[in-house]
Length: 52
Image 1 (tube, rainbow, N blue to C red):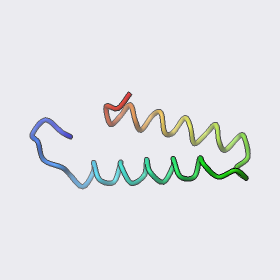
Image 2: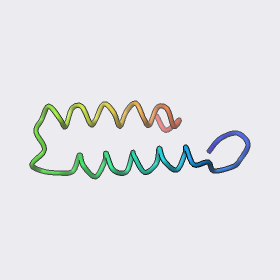
Image 3: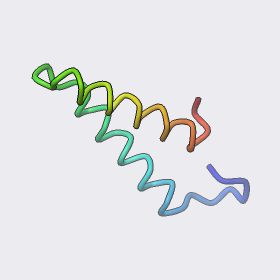
Image 4: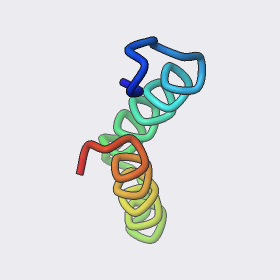
């Protein structure tokens, strides 16, 4: 959450993107190259959100 204590549209959007990426990562048929790319995007987004 941002310092003002308000939950913004941007934060909601980031959470939904993160959930979608994590769900996609669980696909057993996902090629390894794409799996690596998605995992990196997840790490970047979590860092941006202050989760890492």
